[in-house]
Image (cartoon, rainbow, N blue to C red):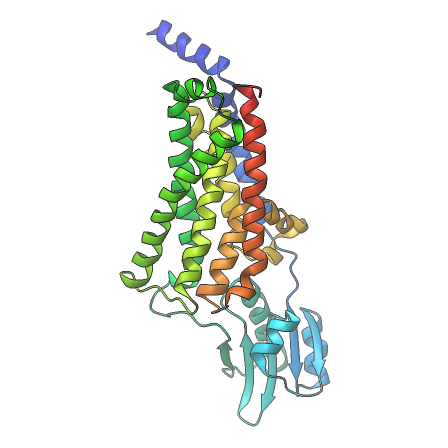
Length: 336
């Protein structure tokens, strides 16, 4: 028994990836959780109309406040200006309009309610409305774009990565590289092949979510499918890159805490503006951000093709860059 223990310890000692996974990957995830889910320094941005100077002064201690001379159309104003809430009063009482239910709206609503409580201890219920509503009876609706994107990306990454490793382990890739085939043709063939299979999976996921689970989709289902397909190709490309540096299936799985889990934090699960120290800007380095943002705009906000075009182009750019990196990384097995 002692000899078995020694052998296992020696194997772990010689396997740097396993040692790193055991010791440092949990620390990485915990550090990300600390920064992302810890105390946020986000200050809500609120526009007010027909409110007293005393109210505006009190609210300014809790938020960035803009006083309007006339009441705008709430939806277009909040979208164009990027405010979290619009507050106004009339003979019927206090009215609050927020963009959607998320942490930013919650921070704005908290500041408004604390201000109202400080100025008027007698509790009166304000009229609260949201520009983008979700199905109140289905809690999955408000975060459906996150779960669809992350689940699809996760399984495609695992499928493609393990498949690439298996191809190498069975020496299929090595035999192929002994022929005059070019590296970009190898990567292109694998990416296109697994990408098409993943695209079929994406179509099934969207159709199942919409027609079986009855998840809310305000925009075009075809746009959702397009976004999911681009995400699947990104996942295949990342899986291919990870597999090049993995010698077996276990080492491929070890990339999950490093490659996938950090991306979940930038998928829209947490509003990027609320992440302290400007860490939200790291989202531009993750393909999940582009896909999930596009899904949110289509599924929740009902946006069209031109509205999500910048994020679609971001996904395409990511796929292209990963393709080039994969071709260069394949030099590990053959220089052409």
